[in-house]
Structure formats: C-alpha cells, structure tokens
Image (spheres, rainbow, N blue to C red):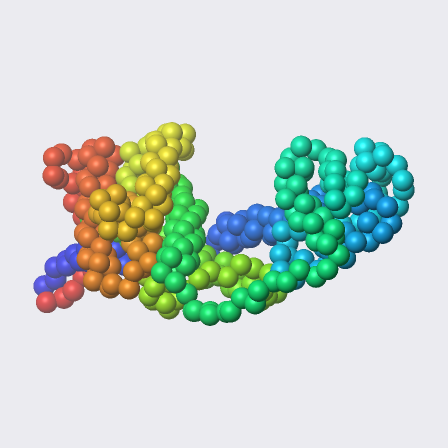
Length: 403
C-alpha cells in the first residue's frame, strides 16, 4: 500500500531555490554580470583621479607682486611670517619678472597668475577678475600691513585643550556614515533586484513557471525564487567586496575614512546585511508580482518603471529623515515597508539602541510574507486562470512513501 505525501511549503521552496541558485550561479551570463559593475568603478576611479589632477592644475593661488624690488621682497617676507599663523588663507606670492603693466602680466603665458598686486605696501593695488579681487582683497591687505611695519607681529600664544570629540562633531560624523550606508544599500538593491524580473519572464516564456505552479504551491515558487536570487546576490556582493578590499589596500590612506557608527562597525555591517536581505525580499516580491502579470519583456519594462521611480522616492524619504531621528518623518520612514531598511540602517549608524531593530526586522519579515502571498495570488488569478482562492491545477509534485 502506498500514497503520495506532498512537500511542505518550505521544502518545496528549498527545492526551487536550490534549482534556481545553481542554474544562475554557474551560468556564463552571471560571470559577466559580476564583471559589469567593476568596469564603471575602475573607469570612475580613473576619471576622478584625472579630474582631480586637472582641477588642481587649473586652480591657482599665485598672485604676482609687481612692486619695486625692496617692496616686493618685503611682501614675500611678510607672507612667510604670517603663514604659520594663517596658513591656507593666504595666497602664494611670486615676484613678477617684468616691469610690464599689471594687465600685461596677467596675460603672460606660462605664469598662470590669478591677480597682480602693485603700488606699495602702504597703498597696494590689486588687479584681476572681480571675483579674485573680492576673494584676495583681505589677505593682500593683511600682508601689505605686515610688510609696511617691517617687524614680526606679536601673536599671543593660544593654549590648546584638545578633546576627543563633541556632540555636534559626533552627530555630523554619524550622519556621514548613515548617508554612506543608505546609498550603498540602495545601489546594491537596485542593481541586483532586476535579476528577479528577468528570471521570471524567461521561465514564463518557456513554460517552466507553469510546470512549477502545477506541481507545487505558487507561494513556494515565489519564496524559492526570492531566496535563490538573494543567495546569488550575496555571492555577487562577496565578489565585489573582495575587489573593493583589494582596491582599498592599494589606495591606502588616499580613500576617505568613514567615522565610527554608534553601534560600531561589526554590528553596523551585520545590520547592513540583514537589512539588505529584507529590502531585497520586499522589492523582489514586488518585481515577481510585476513579472507574473506581464506577458512580454516590454510589458515588464513598462510596469517596472513606476516601481523603480517609487523606490527612488522611498530612498529620498529615508535620506531626508537622517537629520531628524525620532521625528514623525523618520518614524514613518521606519514603518513604511519599502523605506524601513534604509531608515533603520541609518538609525544603526546614529543610535545605540538595539530594540527598535528587533521590532523593525519582525515587521519587515511579516511584510515579506504578505507581499509573497499577494504576488502568488495575483499570479494564480491572472496567469494560471484559477478561480477565487483556488488553483489552476492540483499539485502533483511530491515524494512517494510506502506504508
């Protein structure tokens, strides 16, 4: 005597997830997908380095001194005496090599003067574009006053009392870290969530999805696909993280350093991984619903565009709430499912409290379940043509056991 025992929802989802994970991970398309984001990063780094060098070469702080030799030397020496106290607020001074008019000195090729100071230290005259005159008028007057006295000005000694940080500085630093975390989370989700759509449309075209839906509950199909895509996404993130770590080691101190978050880096990274998973499952379930309703790739692109634009608005909502933790805007962003991962990751960078994260993760997990069930219901009604609350075909996928 024998009968057939159906797989449970989670067992069926595990079968679908394992199938999709292996099919995508060992495909040539996935290899090129991994390489795709690396090229813009390399090109962006090269463009940034070149642009920074060009900007440094284009910007100049050199002011020509077109005075008599004693006065010009006095101006240069005065600038050297003031530099330890004022530093970068002073222009660089270069003695003009010709006795031309200031207008002609500014047109000399290869000199790259931003302005020319002429006259005497007692009555300096500044020639140049109006914005340069406005910017350098005060520093040039200070140098001229120092040159006119001919003596070293007496500056009182400033007693130093350094502290590790302040409340304002700590808040500003943590906001920077929160912004960086939100931006990275958003870019990864938008880059990787599109795989869910393409996979479902492809399987609809070759009727695989209909075979799966006839064999196991549609909820299991959706959940399995989401878990498989999430696993593939983690593989991609791991590869990109290794590449990013190698670039960071090569760059050394050239890369900007983010301040320490409120919960520390280990906990922030852990929450970042969990919130990426929740955000990916939430957005992926919406994309699965769209892919289930669309018949062609063109329909998928048309229907997914509003969701993508809405996701941008959600990101802006969470980003605007960073500076006002505990406000109604920030609480609303933490409650709304699609913006909750972004808002809570920012809170992890700014606040040391742990209980809000436990509450938010439970709420996000519940929303994932609701979104998956809603998407499966839509797919059954529109694609499988089933009746209200029913299935198009009776599931036959199972395993036999003997009694």
